[in-house]
Length: 553
Image 1 (tube, rainbow, N blue to C red):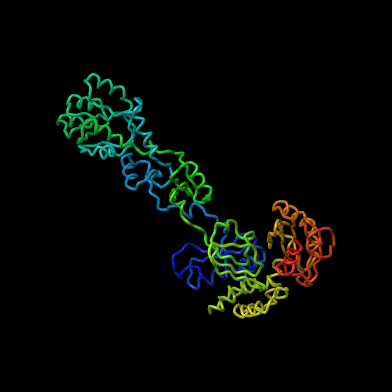
Image 2: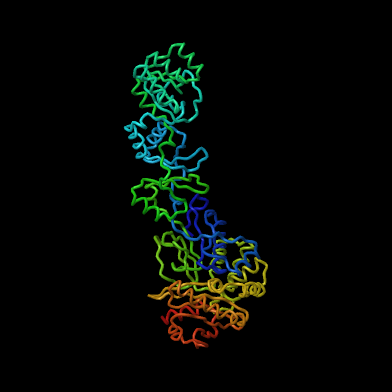
């Protein structure tokens, strides 16, 4: 039982049965996961690869146990390998802070969010290069969108007093390096946008900047304006800052206060945590992306997927019960790591990454094997789980009457019945009565309730099985069932599609089929019609029908 050390924090290990699960498939997943949990492997959980049929619903309801959660596939998804604790910036951060942030964490790209954590876009080094290259454009070179707090921080200034310091506004940077008349013309030209005036120790320009209602007066070189200019600035609500650098340096640094919202890309490639990793990996490698944001529900940033994440060796870990063939397993099994197998069917084509616990024994039900494991480890199943396992054994062995039934099945059933306080025959009849009402189901649903596919050489065979108390019920549905079989054969590209209809009272079966009828002829069963064969004494698909069918192929 090599599923990692007990009580160790680990990724989940899913105990899961085959597609189109029957009662044995569901109950063995639940019972084995419960055994592992009681042994201390708390990260082992039961799962299912398909919808639960009526019989299994009855069993779960009878013993008050919730069904396993639905696992549609075990393919690797973005959320399995992404970096969850991603570093991000918000739209109101300044470009200077963004540069420090990216340099501090050695980032080539950083996601951008609003204050509530909703994804807005991303900033890359290319975006920053485009931002600086626009300074060569006369129309935009002196435009600044930011707050005065950001400006003060960017230029390492000394704020003498500030008004509306947190407001992010668009304005123009005006350098007071011209004669007074020229300066006034520039101020009037930009009067509608507002100006941040940067000037050295030129008192006339400083005064005119205040009188013209500049948003902010920045005096460079560490100089301070005269008290008269400061008083006029207070009166006109013009912010005043003293900067330690020369004018050229101050202008350059001032642009670092630009808000990140002016720079980030809103159309940067992002992915959902549920996207298949293989698809995203191909896109990232083809495009040269170094990483992409991962955006979840309500547009919130969940993390980031980097190229380093793509190199992670991650596989979902699974324990297969009641099957061992890839064609019957949950989709994506080739991407998963199979840890263990417990089954009672034939061994199909099967490969694993490492040596594993692989148990396939000739008993009538997988839950017989699970029951024996409880006994081996001296753990008595709780009565509800004993009822589950007993129900599965009675279902798979047709109340211990199927040719597949062994003494081990009978002993397991007696042991479980005693713990659960149940009478075996009565419980078995209740189980089959619960699943005998076929008239309420769609034909395809009836076929796929307990349906398995087999691959032999170039042939694909699909076989469903149902148990009935009287064949009259089947005769009423025979035509629609045959139509559904034909559609399944077409959709699944089958050589042969069959439905084994077993009469559990008289212990005989009929085989409804479509496809290569020569296969049925070679099996030697008498034909009642071109699409219906009689299988006297046959109740087991696994032990009686499948071996004969595969031999005929």
